[in-house]
Amino acid sequence: MSSTANLVMLSQYKAWADNKMFEMLDRLPQEEVLKQRATRFGNMLHTLNHVYVIDTVFRAHLLGQEHGYRDRNTDTTPPLPELWQSVREMGQWYVDYAKSLNDTDLAQAVHFTFIGGGDGCMSRQEILLHVINHSTYHRGFVGDMMYQAGVMPQSTDLTVFVRDVLRN
Image (tube, rainbow, N blue to C red; front, top):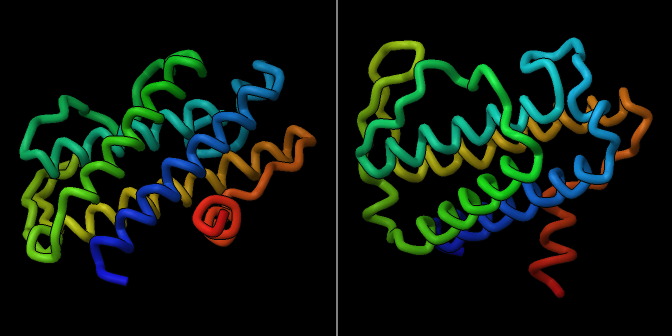
């Protein structure tokens, strides 16, 4: 599989897994989704909002645009349906973007400034891999919070995506 094809598949996986996570949260009582817990971003929805903010930041880097964020999350969190829609649109953007690239594009360096300060430089491929890995990492935190709420989360593993989506 070429690097581009691999990143397209991984971007599709990210969009699928993010959507599954929101489907699970949508079935939970709102008070569990927003319950303050001993975790970096306080609750399930604010954790997923952080992922969206970082997706937005790196999309701006890829496009050579300003993102306008001064922190890695927002002070307030949009309601679940609004954030879910924004995440779906962002996921599709990353899938379409990955499809538009070739190996030369993937190797191109992107220079940017980190939100916390300091210069950054990553290839387009590294940025895409970061965005995909970052969301997987934080979905794991949300899954742990679901266990704390007494709920068994559905699997959002790559193996399940391959079995249920790519092979069907």
